[in-house]
Length: 325
Image 1 (spheres, rainbow, N blue to C red):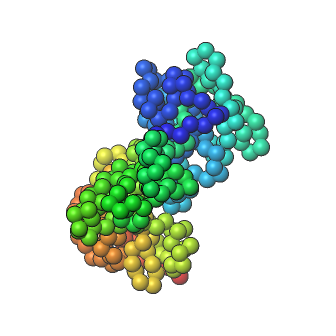
Image 2: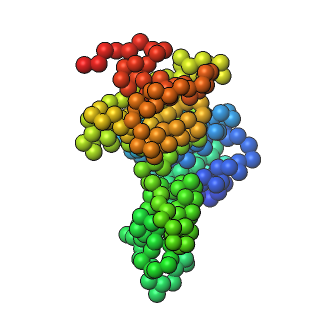
Image 3: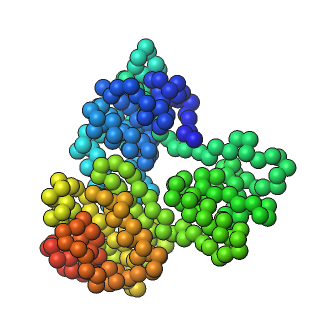
């Protein structure tokens, strides 16, 4: 369920949550969005494309900090070009509804500011709906955050009882929950099923889409890997250009010593589908060379995957490659 904040009480009329944002009777001329996370960007992007003037307030000082920095930077540039006004480091301190409009008060760079909108969407996160789920004497342990405590196989502290999805640790994603459900049932029947949490895909359904799987370049370095990366843009891909979808790129992160693939990051056409190629490669512990030696169909968006893999070692065909030191 959506998280509410005291500074912007939801009335599902002028100030709405992510559910209410799908029920506007008409396109608001001025739309404010609190939160530049996945849901905030998706909803803000949709209403912007329908004609609304959209301002997105993000309290954090970085845009999409959970994503690879190269992807975040390009993604913000693309969304800004589309007309989304994304204000980083903008902390909302209060709201005031006056008739059919709402004034948002916020602080940015030490200055107190305010702006008026016709509608305001609150998208600061979601939480598990667990109220009344468990009896006090159930014996099932909860975490400090109120989630059900489970092991790697989704088994709770009570034998024979499993918990999955938004009620347990990890990202609140439908595909993760479905696989956990399958695993739980398989294990109940005595089979050795397991979910690989290192290959859970993240997707932001804007236009273009953004998606990633595995480690970011920053995470890989923090884990002690000697990193090498390769990046290739859709701007020189024939299929993308023919479709008018030249924005974005594919990026691979790999271990420089072993050549093992560590992560894949995509922004562009069909990113939510293309990223599965990286997920499969990660699942099978592939090297970058494995991808380099494959033959990709032409003309396809997926050719950018091949070029990005080649770019890891400075060998991309349709790009001028800088000499590596």
